[in-house]
Image (cartoon, rainbow, N blue to C red; front, side, top):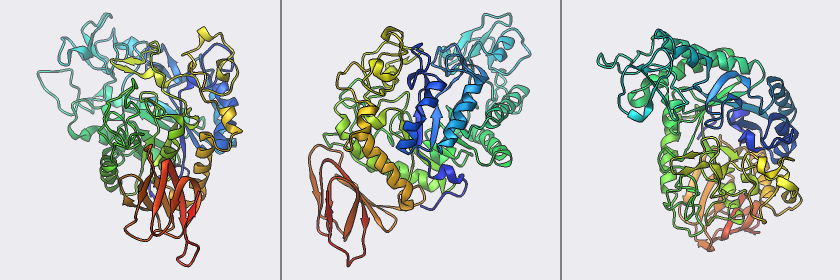
Amino acid sequence: MTAPVSVPDWFAEAVLYQIYPQSFADSDGDGIGDLPGLTARLDHLADLGVTAVWLSPCFASEFGDAGYDVADYLAIDPRYGSNADLVALVAAARERGIRLLLDLVAGHTSHRHPWFQQAVHDPADDRYIWSDRITAPVHSWIPNQGRRGGFYRANFYPIQPALNFGYARTDPAEPWRSPVDAPGPRANRAALREIMAHWFELGVAGFRVDMASSLVKDDPEHAQTARLWRELRDWLDEHYSDRVLIAEWGDPARSVPAGFHADFFLHFTGRGLRSLWDNGTGSQGSWAHGEPCYFDPAGGGSMAEFLAAWQEAERAVDGHGLVALPTANHDFSRLVCGPRTREQVGCAFAFLLSWPSLPVIYYGDEIGMRYVPGLPEKEGSQLGTEARQGSRTPMQWDAAPNAGFSTADPAALYLPIDPDPARPDAAAQRTDPDSLLQQVRRLIRLRRDTPELGTGGSVTVLHDGYPFVYRRGRHHLVVVNPRREPVELVPTEPVGPVTGLVVRGAAVTDRLIRANGFGYGVFRIEPSDARQGVRA
């Protein structure tokens, strides 16, 4: 794999950290995280080695879907602070070498957005999708209570009317199917540029785009949606060439050629991510399909599905963007979930931070926060059978009340603190050289200081079973054993001598690779006349 040619330098080697703002740090004691609280905790991220932060939506909202129902794209919601607080956060982060990305909900608004409040009464307004009768799928069409009457199309919840970016295929029998160049779709495309430009001018470095593939409806192969994003990328390259767009598309082979700088492997598109860490094996985790995954203590998974998806994406991306690999997110269960304990996930980070993808750390995963089952629904978190609230609990900072997240009464917290008395916290792990936090910190610094371990270095898989063994470039070897049982492997080609760089329970010689249960190691391959092997 060669270095990306269409990605800003800062982004090519970024370590991205996702923050769910209402759960990260509360500065004013109301039980909800906010931007000043985040600003006060930036040193934690800088010390960890994070170089970019993505905030889940923090715009004005009624919070029927935790902020993914936007009522004003140009205003920070008062629960988080003000636009001035966002500017202060951007500046404080930049002082620490950290860039800030926001979350753009491009496909729908809140039903309280002024655009929709006008459209419910004006039959000539086509910024949303309207029908005079219910059509399939029935649950997506919501009766309009305004003078206009009829029904509007919603993307998820009834409070989220879908913005009209047109239909790829029109049908005279369904006159609500606007072509992609109709006035409403054109106005909405222009609005995306205006929203992005507003925040770019305030110092924001990019956007993660929610449900980026969903804009144009009935779009076979997403051809018209790709055209829309390609046009927007051309505008971005002309006016804001150092800013980035990350897709929530879940298919880098399509989204990067469509104009995005990166796209995620996601839990709801194929098995590429879930085959690594389903995160719900034997538990009640969100999106817990219970299928075998490679990072499972029982060792019943396979790397084959991930490697096939990776190779397909790598061929299509062809050096023009990045594949983002997350530990978890606000919808998908954390690494510590079900039978997988905090002590077992170091090897997952060893893989994440030595593979040529864009590593994305979900807040708290660096200290081993767990998915908490059995929590109450909060702001649309219970999506059918998916209890997403278990991945949205407050950040655990220290041993103080409310884990240092807030001074509020516990009953006023956005979600309850993990009740486990053995829950981890950042303060304790900061002083423990053997903690997960310190392991992740060392791995991030090794990646930063070692170009072969980044997105531009090549990768050669030497063994795809247990342990997973691969070479990065010519000079680095990685061994990962995420199962409980120790494992030995006789290499089919010489791999040593080596020097251990970040090693935990693994050893390598020319004749044998050994890894303890949950062991891993990143090694430098020495010249053949150097000493034989190293064990740690």
